[in-house]
Length: 72
Image (cartoon, rainbow, N blue to C red):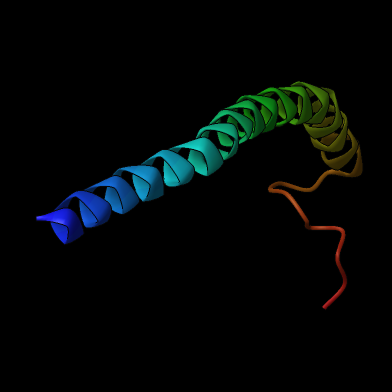
């Protein structure tokens, strides 16, 4: 009976240790996902004027479609 109590206590301590290690990792992962979403939105907002400028430049050169200035 003593061994059963010892193994139950060890199991509970192991679960507590895993939880103590996993909780900060979970929180940092959530923060990272949120930061990546913000960065993606910022990059998208910055790309819109560049896309418009490239379209205007292509229209001024009389070309249609993007990346038409690449010589083949």
